[in-house]
Length: 418
Ligand SMILES: *Cc1c(COP(=O)(O)O)cnc(C)c1O
Image (cartoon, rainbow, N blue to C red; front, side):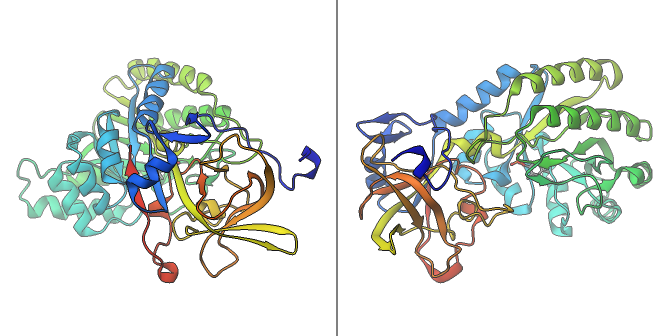
């Protein structure tokens, strides 16, 4: 097929998984054998070595003093969190449920932090008892924590360790999802933070630092550098009103991965260089502070695939439809319904026919009775039949747990770490 006949532009080829004898190889195992080992399709598979390699590459680009945290909401599979716990310096959780998994992973509670706009009293109690760092996001949380601390009679081990989550007065430009700047439900507006700090001091909570998280899924190094510089400067100003020295300064993350045609990998060079400059400034200007970045998607997204099996091949008025046993109930994001404004195809291949000819223009759909259940819209794919395995790349983050599995009552999906 000539380029002109393609209905949609091409993705850059995904190179993280090797191919052997026409099959994608995940965790050293060819795809059809892996499917046999799982015993069913659909499934998600995450590759341990790719996860470790990603952390190694990132550390090589960053100054050694920067602490790297894994924001586990991107992928909270317990086995994966345990694997990540051995690679990173801390885990960021966003619920009591995630806290349990992080603690089970053996991560030192000192290195676990908890963010989220709606922390319940129960969750705050658990967090205090566990001894983790709580990123407080409202005056209500400070008051609750003061109560919780008092109930425990201030006994050792029941001190509330807090950082102030700041809603900055700037945005992370070119982000897939903005989570700071302007009116937001996250954190406390920078203008009100001095008052929050005073309240933290009066309440006798243990102040440890600041948390700023401006946005997610960003592929522009300059935008990330700018947000990190502004975050540092803002924290420096706010530190003047802090009840005690800053020990942690969490500069957020937002590093993106390429999903769509025309997108390229994030250039870590300028980000690492800027963090080196900020680390030197921190040595002088916030001498007790550790600089932290927290990343979810960037650490795990490219190490995972989603695999569904072709059930049926239909031709409707000239258009080929590969009907699979998977769908948006397992992978909402690939269907374009998880925050995307315009639906675009994630990278999709026939994983047991890699490099095989002939190709054709085909759409991949799920088993759900809704037109939203579209996993690939008119893509160039190897000609597939029932039994072939459709693979969606870039599925290690915001896949399994970010999808409405109960919708339509189909069987659950399985996750494996290989
Ligand atoms: C969601 C979230 C993250 C992770 O974002 P990614 O884009 O997956 O890296 C990190 N920190 C906070 C506070 C979050 O809410």
